[in-house]
Amino acid sequence: MSEYKIAYPSSIIEFKSYYYFRWLYLRKPLNKKLGSEKDSLESKSIHRMITYQNKIIAVGRFHEILKLKYQIRYFAVDEKFRRKNIGSLLMKTLEADIRNKGGRFIILNARENAIDFYKSLNYSIIKKTNLLFGKIQHYEMMKIII
Image 1 (tube, rainbow, N blue to C red):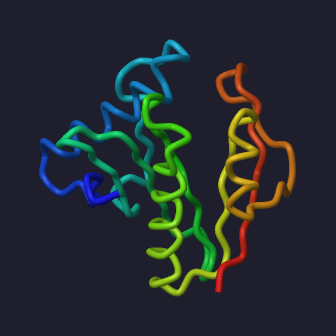
Image 2: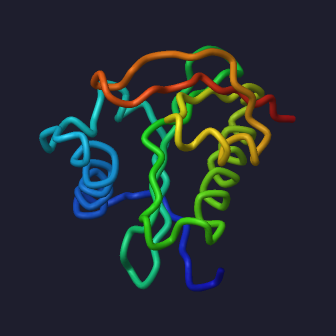
């Protein structure tokens, strides 16, 4: 894993690449415009990415919802790097960051095709939630961390 670098996007160029990656993997397949990959909580969130040979291959972010409770959103891994523990590495990094901030509960809204991935990391389904853009079923999942 030494070839992979876990980082916080910090420069304007890094953030531009980070958001483009989010759009490319999470919104473009749904025919959404560039810009739809952002929300009103970007400045209040902690952003993480994994790079390989200076190219972003995975992204994710979290923000506080309530005291001790955080939400992970906009999680994506480049298709060529899936099933190589990159997603698990990024999730464990986000969880450690949350734990270091005093968080004890993590929630996320998982796409139906990602449920098994999150279950493998000890997340439990709480309930069926929204149908994103009328196309992709999501499920609220939660994990208690110590």
